[in-house]
Each structure stands twice: as C-alpha cells, then as structure tokens.
Image 1 (cartoon, helix red, strand yellow):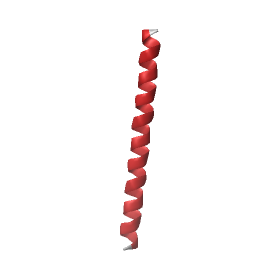
Image 2 (cartoon, one colour):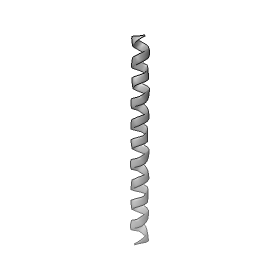
Image 3 (spheres, helix red, strand yellow):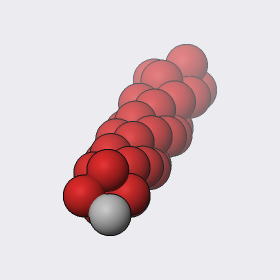
Amino acid sequence: MRDNSNTFIYIIAGIIILHFLIGFGYLLYKMSKKENKK
C-alpha cells in the first residue's frame, strides 16, 4: 500500500514537471518567433 502511494505521488509530480517544461518550451518558442518577426 505504501509503495502504491509513493508511485501515485511520483506520477503526479512527473505530470506537473512535464506540463511545466512543455509550457516553458512553448513560451520560449513564441518569444523567439516574435523576435524573428522584428
């Protein structure tokens, strides 16, 4: 039961980190695109 709970926490943490990385990458992509237009 304890191992299962730990796995669940790791999955949630992984999803949050992945979401943050994707959002950050998208932001950088949008910013660099704007700079190129200028």
